[in-house]
Image (cartoon, rainbow, N blue to C red; front, side):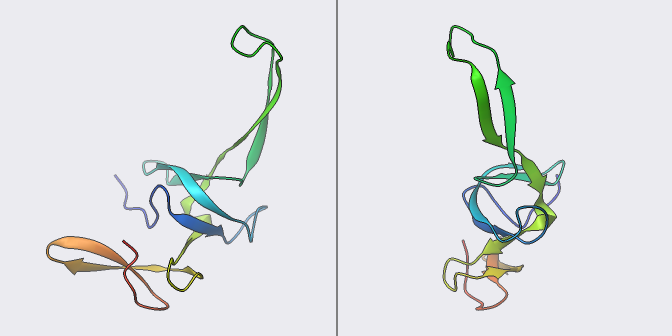
Length: 105
């Protein structure tokens, strides 16, 4: 599996594409395809017919996947989009902010 610079529940900023400038929380990560689903970004509409579970039917909006290269992690301490540096501590890789240098995990 490919290494990803972001994980589920991280806050990210979209740095390119139609939704550039938006921030959101990562809902799902797909390391094999290098894509992520971010809350409120790349909203797709699906038309559904009435069923027993959804008797009203209608149009359902849900976020679609975008490339992980189009998002930047927002550092929890400096609150800015940043790149990630991995530092080995006690045999584990810890993510650090490139701007302020503090640990993210």
